Image (tube, rainbow, N blue to C red; front, side, top):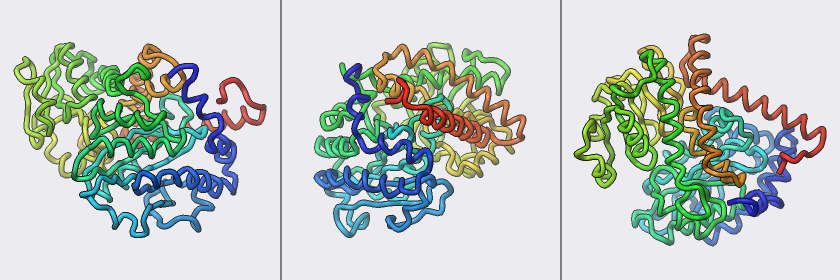
Length: 436
């Protein structure tokens, strides 16, 4: 999208008017935000879906009376749920073509959030809640690391057992459209490029798809960004950025992992790959320097770098115990099952971890440039910030004697605070051309 882009569509949404209230923590913000979202979600009922909105601690002060439950997880205190039927989540029928939606909003910068849409199998309610919370927080950190003031979100959808029908994909689009620009979405784990085109038929607010109105699938720029950062990771672990002669175990070869595998092969690296989808593996079979493994064996390959590129939370005490690689590159989102615990264990074992929200920011860079009406080159030109951020993280972790994930989160939160203070000063001086 260009001059008649999403920015023009967002001129009158309630989230934009709430920006100042949110930033100064106005005591009425929670009521106003709930009213705005509740008004929008009235339209969601036509999808016959169930929607859960998860808010972060920043919106906790006045929402308790309006919420239906609480979470004890730090940073995600209040939970507000909207259901079409009174039985709520217990009423989800896995055989019906009615998806359940979980939308995590960790922050609402400028009244607009960026976040992917992730697919999970029917019945995975606990996992969906976890992913909506953690992945929305990770998106906030990701945006902070690249200096963007937008909010972080994540939509997780439970698919019916009947699969991804056209009706199912259209309902996802209807939910995104009902949010009226508060969520700028892109497809994530579990969806294919052609799915984005179907979702697009029902919403203006999805980016990063293959079509004339978009810059293309964002998985490519995510992989390009991860590849851009790989030299800094190798230098930290092995003293040289050279990819040739190094081995990489890629856990999942979808739109991101598959492209990353191609880039590594072009640079004369060796890869071990695995995926649960044989079609994705097929294009790599028979290629030199490629070994296809069973999913359960990828951690045992002893590759120089392990690149988780699929589901979240694959690194935990059990997998760390059998891991043969000295380096983990967080290509997928939220690869640590428990960030504090697993970050500490990895450091104790001398395993270098490149935090996911630092390494895989290329995709959201593309989304933001598309949102602003810019081109793909503008996004690619910004990719060098990834190795710079990795350098900052590695140096801070050494200086503080901490794990790299804790160092990265500290940097991201400091950047977010600086951006908020700058925006607050700008508002006091009046609007500028940069405010949309």
